[in-house]
Image (cartoon, rainbow, N blue to C red; front, side):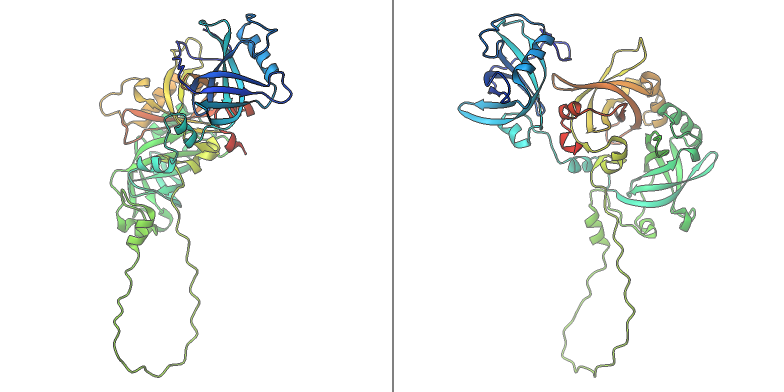
Length: 458
């Protein structure tokens, strides 16, 4: 089969029992409506088999190359085409589409296959009507289940002890089992544009995979010193110069320590609201008795009570145990949880073939992909959770800049250069790692539509 759109190798399954399709062209086009049948349907794209002449007898069965066919179909349909999917005698879906490619099938000279991108992804209800598998849309619920204990957003000064002295940072969120810290790159001895390989080597010399942090050291000094096992490294951004480290406490933070810090930390499996209710003082016990009321005393002026301070709220939506979507937005932009097939390959000439993985999060500025740790080679016993060693091996295998290709099933959506900005080792899945890739260029409007991010662009 010959195609004008970039597609993976291999034959595609053909389904003749799918819904019928009717293509409604714009008012300025030469083709009013064309009937066909669907070959494949995904939440963001549709493959439709249509007659080669688009109801134009003058064209007949003249053979064309895919590129010429794509250009001719676009001229015939015009702008603003709509596609309707019909099951039986009922229209189950209708919406605006955009042609992204055509294919010439080998089994027919009178038909061609058109690939349309949907202007708006199918809703969960439409997917169920069309018989598609509906992914869980409640990202907050999914990501929260990956975390041992719910975290609370804070802005707390901390002191990280390194081999070359103490470095001051800021804790951005905290739980009884872990924390996330921001530090300036120049304080750690890195330039603001430090890449992942440079960061991994430098942190291995200064911190290692386990370090000591003093919580709220300005007030408490070293009274609340916690040993932290590093699970996440995020490269510094050239605009902010911030290095982000995430980790879990070797020993959980005791409730007494949380009280000294002035925060209510939920226990594992407990929400923030439940923690606040648990720590609230009990209601006073009142006993009604008969008594003679004393004479009223003159009321004394009372000092106004201070206004209650707002309690820090938990992060709105977690991507994985040490990063939430709100804090990821400066790096990736607005994000949604979406599973796509991604292919990661090195940009250098003569590099090994690409590695296939699955996206966890898709944003306007990049993706977060789940990759097998084995793609960087087998780790020696005791080094399976060494984030710095794995980060160094990753940059040795792939480099700091890679080429990404994103697919939705058999349909190619996007390809281009990207930069590795963060690597995270989830505690609950010891065989995988979460890698954050930032797009090297901004997405254009057609790419935003094809990736289903149109509602985030506004």
